[in-house]
Image (cartoon, rainbow, N blue to C red; front, top):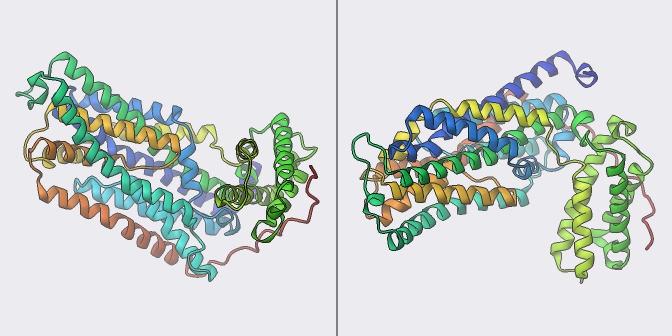
Length: 483
């Protein structure tokens, strides 16, 4: 409450609006993407529609709660480490408001027309748009985006549909080679459900896709809300409030280990690496003797977050540069020490996880029919068989789960619809090119439309007059630890 009372009434109102819209995005994401999980079980008559969507909603809810947070940090780190903190409270809210409104409008529009469009592309395009516009305001075009992270995410979004198409088609061929039950490769007859064993497989894959979708897409909502909170209430959310005295002591020890390792390699004290030991020493000095984050002043928390992320970024570049012949032991020590330090800033508040889980779970229980009809009836020229549905969903489930493990967002929509198309091609069922064309068109247009839309909206509502706050003062020179 103290943090809220320090904000103006207008800022608090905008903060609440942004939080509501962020949860609204997850709600829309739920009913937009429900079809990805339930289309196959509905169109193979394995589950009745109302049972399928309620079960999918429950699995999405559990996926958010249990799925981790690595993808959320990918979303947070799409913007440079100091942009949200330094842009100012009101300006930060306008930025988040712009990207949220753009994302929700595009999601609703594609849902209305029954086009399987990617919520991931939508969100990421909207973030890139406001980042680019903020850099234009600052006079440094392009500096408002973390291009390294954007490249990683863009590659995952590009490759994952190809994986869905190829692997689902290949899995269908494998099934045909080893499972000879003809019933598996037939379309459902009337309204009768498939044999029990086939039905069980399809229900399991539906469950897996729903859980994986909740995990991956729910984390995008977590990342959005943490962006809002870190930008508007940095004194409360710049650092993990759950960090206790023992964790802070371990962080100091980790910093000392990193400084000692760098001292063994003199070239790390020169050129582009010279800032690294200074940053580490400054962080260590700030944390030394502290038993709780409350002992760190609110203003210092903002700069400390930026210092930690910048130091981690430099350490990552050093590890990949090949400029130093680090021993395997030193590399592992640096890796573990980095995890300890970054844990102080990469966190998601529990109430955020619960709120996103509820929003996504509720959204999943409605709105399935438009896009499910497209996936189930309009991608292939023939009705989906049991084997096609199971192959597409199994590949989608494993692809999304793998993306979770490496902390990258993927499009459930594109992976599954591509998987269905792959099985149709493998089965020689033929594709409805009008539908495929619309899906491809949405795939191509989503990023440029959302980038342009969020950038334009941010420019309009900010009046084109956003000015950054003065940058955080540079870290004082602190003597690094000697080995």
